[in-house]
Image (cartoon, rainbow, N blue to C red; front, side, top):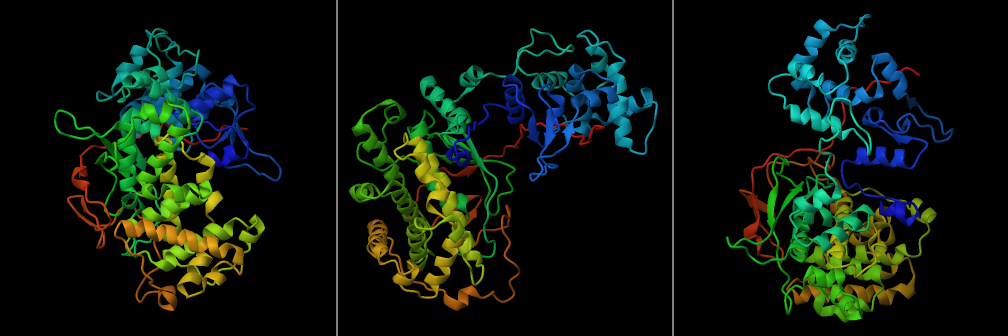
Length: 550
């Protein structure tokens, strides 16, 4: 969304189910149609639905799915499609739960023309059953009588209602039935008590201006279910663990860190993928306050107070999350994107002790050289080979930028969000090139491509980062990997990325009963424990994926 906004396009984040908001937006703004790949758009009574999967960009030609022809084929009206979708089965009402009902329909309401496709016959039989009942609230009892005993009728009604766009009604439901939650309802249910702060967070979320804040304030929950990591590299921990301290500071900024009557700090449910975590239950993470004079200021101070003094306080809080607040003047002297990169590199070096001076050289050289590169130059960079550790480090850096956006949002935006965008400060291929060069022992002049005007800045940024790390008892050492690292390890298979569960975490990052032993600069994970809760998904998509006749 930030990329689209940077190109001058409008982008919004959904306040409720995304497909509902897209369908409602299309109808309210009289759009030509919805380009997507989600059959729910056939069920909503909205603008035409076009297939993005069949789109030919060079001709601007695609397939339009006809809601009217589907209704004609099924013998249903458009207002009956929501009930049909629910009785076929969707993500909320599984088809397996409805198999008995569907068999009854096939037996009692068989289609006039049977096909070889049993599922298509079932669709037609369910449609015949619906068309045999007068569309009214009283007739809905006949539907209830056909349903299996275990199916909650309230759930069915709620799912039918979830397909109704603003000012639309269903013949099967009472007009007085409470509609799906509004933003005001969500504010009432939110776990954060300050409604003014909550309203600001929701408005920023809708405009796509903040990162991860709304879910924390409203639900005390956050997630990251994807990653790109080398499963065979025992020296680099998962990104979820590396950036855990930053997230704990974000939680403290947003929720405070005062203990309640049970001596428990505010906690957040995290659904973060890392080796050993199958994402069947959330980790319960405690907020951790910043160790700064005077303590953490209130969210109202950071978000609502105006003036240069508060803006400086926001900047200080941002640096404090990365433990760089004692070098505030030095960071303020840098341009904003470079300062943000330096903060992130400080955090990475403090948390991952296997990172070396060569890795730091590669990151800093990449940051400086990127500014003078055109898109065409970046596109034509040639790499001698692809290295899995370089890919892993590049991913960790980008994920760190995303976490930095959350810190920036929580602190009240000391940086413009645009200054933290990956395309402003990072290019994967350029970093890869610098990484290979640094570990081969190339000089600073070679890393900087002979641009001597960058040499002073290169040395200054390295000195600043190393000084902050030294103040935290972390010495960055030279560990060139050279040709040995660039070659394939004996017996190693192709690097395997994005595995979400492995039976162990390699030393020094390991856990027992999911309580982490961390070798970085933090030692406050006593509040990090598991809670056995099943995960539900609110996404809804009715299951049949057929094309209507065209």
